[in-house]
Amino acid sequence: VMKLLAVLLACVLACPLSAHAQQEPIVIRFSHVVASDTPKGKAAIRFKQLAEQATQGRVRVHVYPNSELYRDREELEALQLGAVEMIAPSLSKFGPLGVREFEVFDLPFLFPDEAALHRITSGPIGMGMLQRLRIKGVVGLAFWDNGFKSFSANRPLDMPSDLSGLRMRIQPSRVLDAQMRALGAQPMTMRFGEVYAALEAGVVDGTENPPSNFYTQDMQDVQSHFTVTNHGYLGYAVIVNRKFWEGLPSDIREALEEAMAEATRYAASIAREENERALAAIRASGKTQIHVLTDAERGAWEKALAPVGVEMEGLIGAQLVADIRRAIE
Ligand code: LMR
Image 1 (tube, helix red, strand yellow):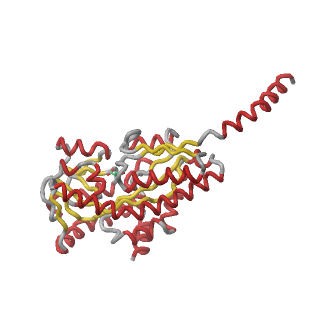
Image 2: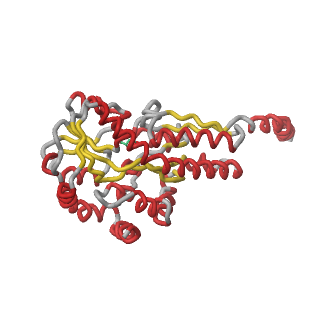
Image 3: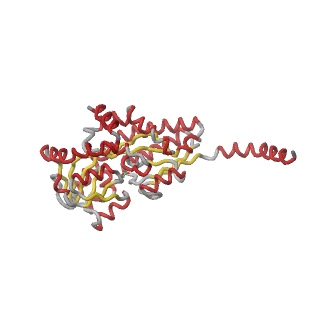
């Protein structure tokens, strides 16, 4: 009984202490792999500002860009272990979580423009996809934009056959693997932070990126040709550790949800411009020759990549692919 009393007394005494402890800021470590001067890098900083403002400093967000803290695969593991609270991997990187449906966004020439894409990412199909992440121990908060990818290498890439035999760096997506094989190229999966060095050393011959990722990693120094194909989309899902998220006081969680919605609108509003600016900067560098596809060339790329959709439907989920195609028609 004495022991019990002592414990009770200790609890009462500790009360003011724990109230004090609650005033310690809640820390969100947000790790990502691109430069700060990109659509994702800027949106992460915007989220930090909005979140800290809305919670009057009760939440502090630390953004770690450029694979400074974790690289591609490691950041997913770190999130699940709770070593970071928030990450925004590209939709091509969810395979290691056991999620293949996000690879639908990798299908070549699926989305004609951003409007079609947003019909999915801000509509019921996208919300359903984020929901289904819960069983993986993470909560999907939003889709963030980057933009459409183009191919680069150290030779002109006007026609699909120009990729034949080249070793092309890809993200860890089976759809991207199939895409490169359909072009006769040899896909090599590699972390984003390793791409520049691999291009420089000639470990890979080329890659695919939106202009902002290409330019902010100085790939113009190691790639002589860039063809504006816009053949596929690159975007992100912002995800948080589920235990962390569900353990937050509800007023804090709501404030963070609002900050996230605002940061998401911001990312969508700057992405296209950021990529246009990067493309102009690549051109101005004079180091990489930029080719814009003619209509006839574009037709040839579309034709060469058409089989990828058919081949990969089963892996992604035929129903999902059909639903998306219908929604953007
Ligand atoms: C890549 O690996 O090419 C991209 O996913 C990097 C990024 O996060 O934009």
